Image (cartoon, rainbow, N blue to C red; front, side):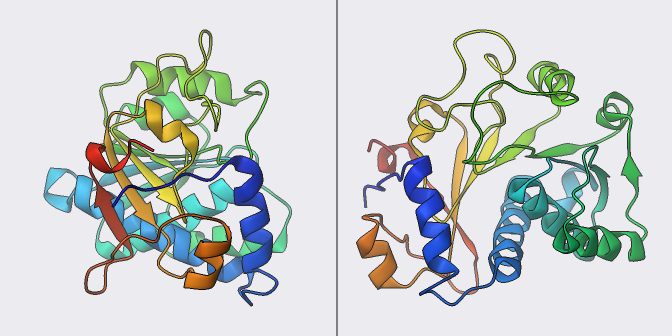
Amino acid sequence: MTLKTISAKAAAALDKELMSSGAFSIDQLMELAGLSVSQAIYRVHPPNNGRRILVACGPGNNGGDGLVAARHLCHYGYQPTVYYPKRSKNELYQRLSKQLEDLNVPFTEDFPAALGTTDHVVDAIFGFSFSGEVREPFPAVIKALEETRVPVTSVDAPSSWNIEDGPPKSGVGSNFHPMALVSLTAPKPLVRHFKGRHFIGGRFVAPSIALKYDFDVPRYEGIDQVVEVGASEEKL
C-alpha cells in the first residue's frame, strides 16, 4: 500500500473534525498519540539497549504527546527524564506533568547534561503546526540533537523541519536527521526527505474520516498502536 500524506493545513482540520464529528476529546487524542510513540520507542530501543530515555517536550500538543509517552515508558520499566522548559499553564498539560511527578519522573533544565547521560532521545518539541524560526531555548537543543550520537526518535516531525519541504536548507536543524519518526494519524509531506525508520500511529480514525481527508489507514496487527512502514511505501 502506498501511503498518502496530508498537509499541515489538512492535519489541523482533521484534528478539529476528530474533536467535533469524531467525538474525541483532546485528552483522548493526546493519550493515543503518546501511547503510539511509547510503543515505537519500545520497538526501536528495547529496554535491553538501555533504559534511560530523555524526552524533550515543546510547549504545544507535540510536547503533550511527549509527556504521555514518558508516562507509558516509565510503566514499561524505562527511566525517563523530561526536558520541558516552557511549561504550559493549560490544565491538561499541568495534569500530565503531575502524573509524571507522582511517578518520580525527574524534570531537568540542563539539556546538555541530560543528553550526556541518556540512551535514547524522544524529540517532542515541534509538530505539524511548526513554522518560522526556532525560538529560544530550542536552537541549542536542536543543535545538540544534530551533533549527538545518541539515537533520536521524533514525534510527527523532526523538530525544525518544514512540514511540506523537510529540513531547512541552512541554519538550525539543517543537519538534524533522527533515527526514527512516528507520524501521527497520517504521514506529512516531509517524509519524502526522511531516511530512517518510519512508524504510523493512528489506530482510531474512522474509515469515513480517512476517506474524506484522502489518506490510508495502515493495517495494524494485534494490539499494536503503531505500524512500521518501509521506504517502498513512502514514495507518495
